[in-house]
Image: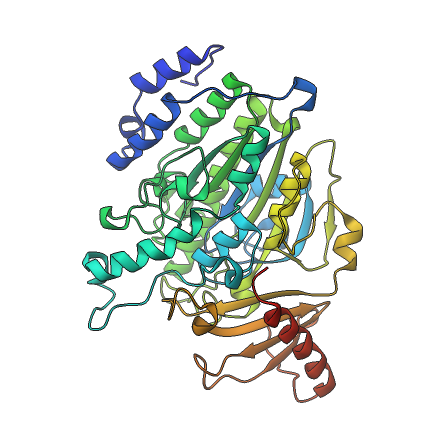
Length: 465
């Protein structure tokens, strides 16, 4: 039953009478969402004609840049995202800043590179003598995680910046930054306390796989309050566990090269279904016209054909298999549907949203407004870096560096860091003609390597802004 109400009291009564633990069977900590939604304080809103757009940010989790119908995959069915792409400005050569999910997500939220926001890794350093399995129960490791996520407390992230225009904001799905409140969200699903099992989403990870009700309730509440809203929809999909419903797995069992690949392909379609539910809900609530929808993946994925794990050039790698993602921008009546093959970056999302909302960007954002065609065409290069899974020193980003990379036109240079990648070699690829990065051209284009390395060094040397 879909809630249709006109008074906030009705929303509160619905939330009280329909706890999400019963509708979704999620972790008990999801009641934090209920308390937050039911206990709203008053806000002042702009006049109706001045209201900025709603913003819906959809983030896939571990999805290869080729693995969509609109990107040319011959087998994976993504009809809902294909439809979104047909309505969007499509950047087929989007890049995230890093191929690990925690630093990548932090960059999306803040518009800053990992060495600027200092979330370079998924986890803090392991204490001496403590292994990965024991770490979640180790007091010193938990203290290090708390110190790591404290950087979010005062970070000028999108939800905090949007609050100046009276946005309500909601976190669901993947979120490594502790409680949703640390990221500045007004509401959310993730409690994020390290000593209570919080790491990368806890209760929030139920979204998508177990339904969309929390997201729909939030949108309906924002409607009742006549507030613009910012939605972070980052379900852990198609991320492992690859456990799609049988009805979708049946689509691929006979055509995939292995059972493991069939499961991943089915997970991509399952994720697509949840995106369709969200987009259909916006349509049903007559909100699509007033909503800026942005889609990307937090990092890529190359499936090991024989197992449910990533291949070496996938996650935590400086190659396009880990870094590249399509970026879609839909804003009906404001943004024309078209395709752009100029490289763009995840750090461009925050400036784009702020510009659409009429908010001045804070100092230090290097990204551009993706809706400014001149700025997109005029930027000479984009940059990024890849770091160790566990940070070496959470206060010194360079200590965890594995490699840096630059993309300028069709050329991509990868420069390994000798401390953490001692056997690495400088690599140069013509990704326009060799998208699989199979042929290192560094020896044949020495001057181009010198030029790109100089630009990469200058970007890195500039440090935090």
